[in-house]
Image 1 (tube, rainbow, N blue to C red):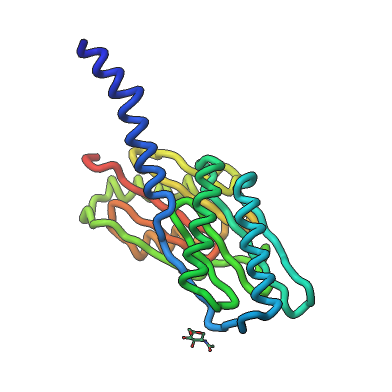
Image 2: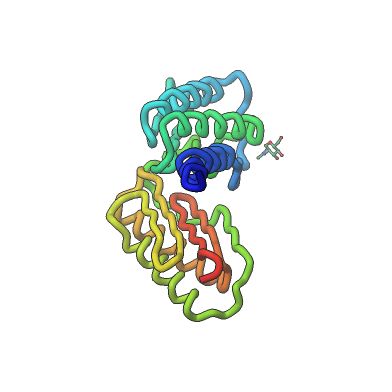
Length: 233
Ligand SMILES: *[C@@H]1O[C@H](CO)[C@@H](O)[C@H](O)[C@H]1NC(C)=O
C-alpha cells in the first residue's frame, strides 16, 4: 500500500507538479526594452512590423529559432528574430512567443525596436540590421540571497560557470556541476565563437556582481548564463 502511494507520487503527482510549475513560469517576464525612436502609425513600417510579428508567431510552432527581414521599400525594413529555450516543447515555444509579441505590443506600441526576454523565450526586432552582431550590453541581472563567504561553494560555482562557458559547442548548455545547477544560451544568429565570447563576459559579470549569491542570472543582449546552488550543500 505504501509502495503504491509512493509510485503514485513519483509517476503522477511529481511530474504533474513539475509541469504546472514549468508552464506557469515559462511566460513570466524577465525584462522588456523599447527603443527611444518611434514610428508613425499607418506607415509601411507599421505594416511590415505587423507582418514580422505574424511570421515570428507562425514560425514558433515549428522552429525554436528563426529570423526574418521584412521590407517593401528599403527604408521601411524591419528585422526580427525569436528564440525559445532549447529544452521546452514546441507548443510551449509557440505559446511563449505569442505572449512575447503581446507584451511587446503593449509595452512598446510605437517603438521602432524592442526586445523581450520571458523565462522560456527571447524576441528582438529593430529597423537596423542586427543579425549576427555581438550583444554584450547588460540587459538584466538578478542576484539571489548571499550565502556568505563559503569558499567551497564559491569554487563550485566558478567550476559550474566555467563548464557552461567552455561548454559543449552548442548554443544551449545546461547541467548540474557539483550540486550547482546551471543553464546558458546564446541567440543562434551568433557564431559559436561569439557565443563563447558572450558567455564568458556574462559569467565574469555574474561573478563580480552577484559575488556570494546562492543563485544568479545575467542576461546580456545576445546570451545569458544562470546558476543556482542546491541549498544544504
Ligand atoms: C516615443 O514615444 C514615447 C511614448 O509616447 C515618448 O515617451 C518618447 O519620448 C518618444 N521618443 C521620441 C524620440 O520622440
